[in-house]
Amino acid sequence: MNLSSKRAWLLAAASVALIAAFLLYPEHRQHFFGLIPYAFLFTCPLLHFFHGGHHQGRHPKFGEQQP
Image (cartoon, rainbow, N blue to C red; front, side, top):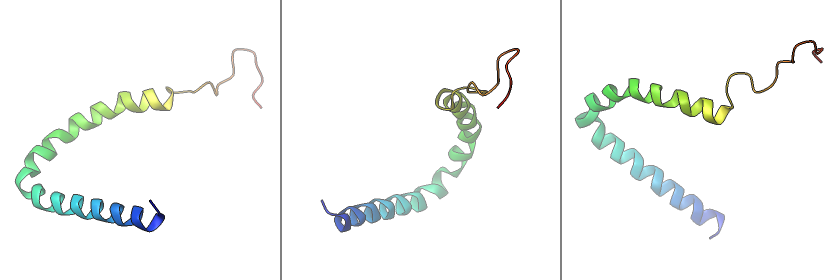
């Protein structure tokens, strides 16, 4: 697959996704907004898992100098 055919598939997929979102959004707007709080609650553990926690080992141990 060359670059132009990949772009064509990407453009087609994005077009289908936008059309589907346009058609489905008015009917399922209440479901979407009802799930937003749960999406925030679900992303917090995922961010901690992929981000590596709060400090990522940047803080010096007791008695060490900061660079």
